[in-house]
Image 1 (cartoon, one colour):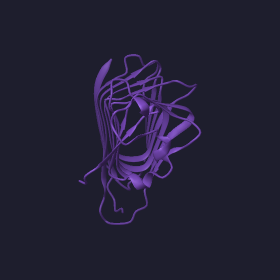
Image 2 (cartoon, one colour):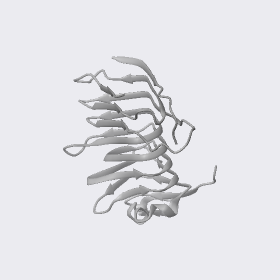
Image 3 (tube, rainbow, N blue to C red):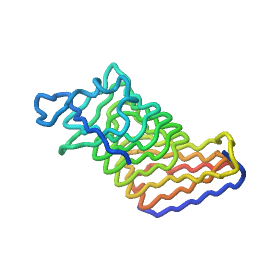
Image 4 (cartoon, rainbow, N blue to C red):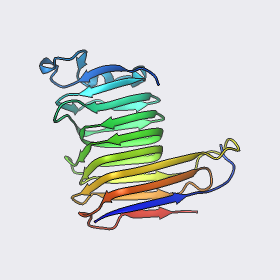
Length: 223
């Protein structure tokens, strides 16, 4: 069952291109002809030094015994370059916090992802596949999010909007867009809208396929 859902939620009150560097990422750089190439662990220690950077993933990348944490960064792209680029996690997660202009494209990801207090997040042409006992992707106060042409297999998707501190008379407007998204194999989605009157949020689901959904998707609205 595919359907088109457009939800526009408006609450009114008072409230508060840069050229990029490019790096190649692989667990086996000996087979990669492009340079510079390193395992992801070489970059993950301090991601703030890699603003305005494209990371091109080749082959398999395993995140183990370190944290891939993108905190207070801007304009970072994770892009799959060859035919089967993938990121695998054991118990680790990918974390995005207080960041903007983060893009994930053409990757297969076997990790939980936590995105919070961030803006301009784009996920394109990617697959998220359960490999451990539990995998989820969580958006908490992640604004201007686009998920396009992507598949979730046995994933839990949590999207949550909470109030922001009122700091000006200008009412911000943010968006959430899901287009050509498929949820398979008991994937679940929960959307909680509880942001009060601190900003406007428009939500668009355009051709989101829940045909293998065991339960109806959950939408929670609060005053």
